[in-house]
Image (tube, rainbow, N blue to C red):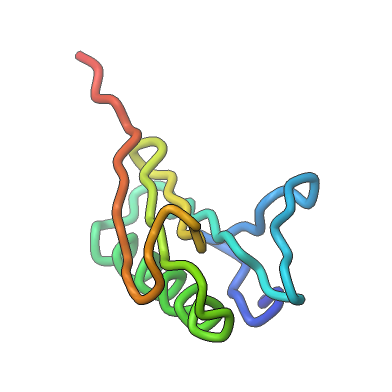
Length: 99
């Protein structure tokens, strides 16, 4: 399934509609939740697909770049962010490893 041209289904979910996630009828953030037991190739493929969809939106707006954030071991967001210059993709790791 796709929302505003962005895949939603196993491994993908749309952000909460409580947040301002739609601008000019485009989704601005994709949350990636790989299925349990997924290998890194599956995760990487989902992240690359989400980043490409966000890149198309960012290119249309020509204002911000893409920020890929790891929140937990298997939870990532790919978002258009004013923190990132147009034409760039940054990565952020917010996941804290515990022993």
